[in-house]
Image 1 (tube, rainbow, N blue to C red):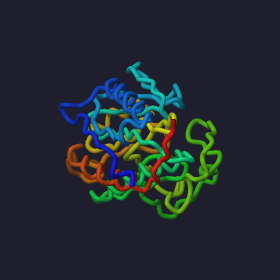
Image 2: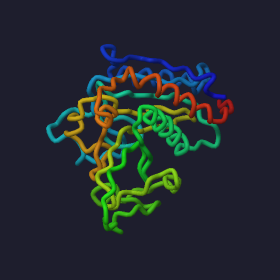
Image 3: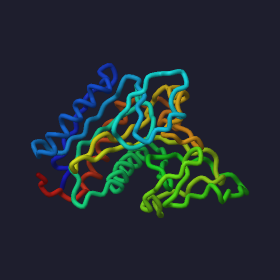
Length: 266
């Protein structure tokens, strides 16, 4: 299985955190080598110094109002923050044919859901939204707002802008969209990926114990009707990246093992 050949590289944690540009250059280098089948699937695990990054769907209205610099990147998704206390993973993985990006994203989500569960934090997916979520508390006798119910295929996430959503982002493994039946949902882990020449880049960011005020300057992932969370905040105790790292690595290895072996591509 693929996990037998996956290489995990702990690139830099804590005082050895890796500047975003340095990690991006290393991703590009490894991506070229993986496309050429010169290295096995490789996962970079690290922390960054504080940085805001924006994917290709970022709405300018979601950027910092004070002019804080933002790095533009070629992943999917919108604006987010990376920094101390957040475990970032960049899997450089060759996907099997036919390439199914949604299935790959769901595997990353599954690894993080399992890792969070090992710490006693219950998380889930939400219809139409990528990432790993802590659901808001149910509101007794709440009246569901029909206008906020997700219509898979045409989902409004922000400011009335309709977005095409893959219908596989719904099903029994997804919690229903929040249409007023619960309090604010909270995103614990964000995912944004790119696949080029059959090989993945970018990846995920899991909030372990960061300073959450960094998110106050932006609209994280362009989502205005939900919040962000951390493992430390949910558990009420310190949970440094170094503590989460081995469990995330373990569960990533498990889910990547479920991928079929890719055929050689040239």
